[in-house]
Length: 302
Ligand SMILES: Nc1ncnc2c1ncn2[C@@H]1O[C@H](COP(=O)(O)OP(=O)(O)OP(=O)(O)O)[C@@H](O)[C@H]1O
Ligand SMILES: [Mg+2]
Image (cartoon, rainbow, N blue to C red; front, side, top):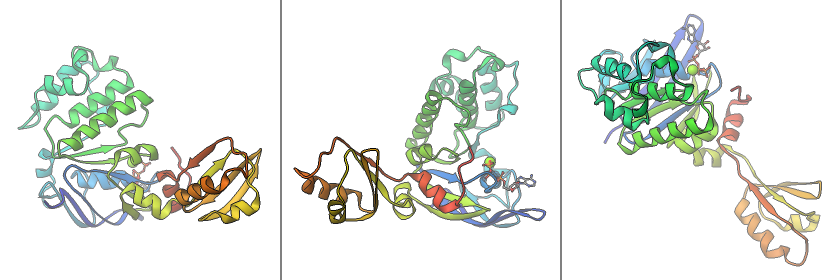
């Protein structure tokens, strides 16, 4: 089966500012795809173009079989777009809100099924204005799914949520993947992207710097792993270890930076016996955050 989202050479300018400078990507059914990048990288602009909400200056976009540039209206029935909180009516209840949004679509999921699924069944009669931030976010996800979309677009779905609410949203997104929907999301949380996304693209200045499976990007751009050894390793022993780039001793520990963590660890365990006192071992492997910082050369700002 071909991709559900297919973007080629996408360009968007705002006057002098080139917000999107030639992006190409594909997303398949049953896949969670993450757009990562610093503030202003062009993530939201890209999403809004795919959703048919903004017109691009160049490129081709197919979403769920629809040519979005030619027919931005047709795509709306096939996709789910997470609304900002501003889209709610505070004096409606949760149940009324879901039924109202369902009435906008020709095809919709039954309100009680949706509320059940998002853990909102008990809140059906609660006024929207009385919801906590986490429950509001769930309601906004319910509205995103009200038309049973093939492709779901989520712009920072977990920003502002506490760890518990965040995990709840992760579970919902994993459920969408399990049902064979395609999910395109943005996030500033690299741990979340690593855990949730099948593939990610790292953007900056409107361009994709790298895209792929998180662990492959980590392999390519994450840099060395660090083995923290609870004990002072003598130089001659460190020299025998494979893959080591550098070793630093501090506060009774040795920090060994290595490109071959498993080989280093193995050699250490083999040769250590009787030669050093080693209280403990920690292995710190690079993460998607290291990839992000290596590629963008900037600090995370959120
Ligand atoms: N309506 C607009 N008019 C003019 N410039 C805009 C408009 N919307 C976005 N931009 C500019 O386009 C660039 C990309 O913005 P965009 O909102 O897509 O970034 P983003 O990656 O979503 O950032 P963030 O992480 O802060 O949400 C930025 O330079 C931004 O200032
Ligand atoms: Mg944005």
